Length: 360
Image: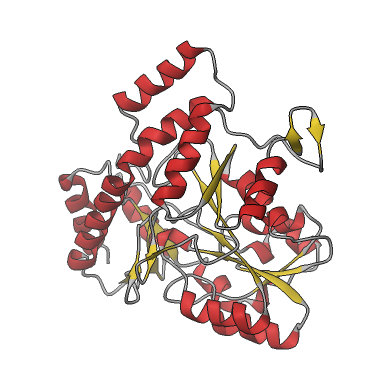
């Protein structure tokens, strides 16, 4: 079976974890600080704060960015639930903009339509989905025109760039996930990045019970801390991230050149968008039949995402109407992700191409 995802943990990660465990300091400590500094430097950002998951990173970023109860935040319905849930955690209101049918990312034109009709929107929470940057030229024009707070969900976009600029540097905060299926992993874990020192200090307190110093709690906070064990894995994984990404890009390039099937639509990569292929996602009309074809040949797949957020049962209970994002509704029935991870052999990549090309 060719798996849809395959985290690569080598001796370097194992030895570093052993070093931490032997040290006796296994909670949040010097290794976490080292990982924060290294990841922020890699991303060309001033400050990083490591967290226990991508979800806690999103929650902390929403709070630190100034989102409060009753605020309206535009986001995408075509992503994992944690994105919009982080807005609901603070009793703010997600407003769902539709997506671009070719890139799967949030559609700036639909964002502006909402802004024209909803003048009190406070923030924009975008997702660089599948590893592809959003259209940041149009989005930043809207951010400046409407004076919006911008938060970037980069949980699938480690190392992605827009016209040479690292994603995660456009908003006041950005977030990353290090779940095992991501481009790099810490097991579970996340990171919030910012170039704002005040925001940075706020996030550091937020994720550590609101402590300004030990046992002095200056604000409401949470236990969102990363452990040194996770950070040790992250330190070693970060050294390999470019290699992992390049392997993903090589595999995707092979697909782009060699998949020739009129029943399959390959992903579109706009000019100067550096895609790191967290997923290689195609569109097919008869998805069930296509999936049966993959399974017959023992090829793994993923459907990210089968139900838009505004069609999820909980969100429908809150009054959301999925028909307001028809593109997302349509694409959720067509998308299929095929293996693109760096653990694939050349023979496996060739087999995937051959199987897809023989789908009829």
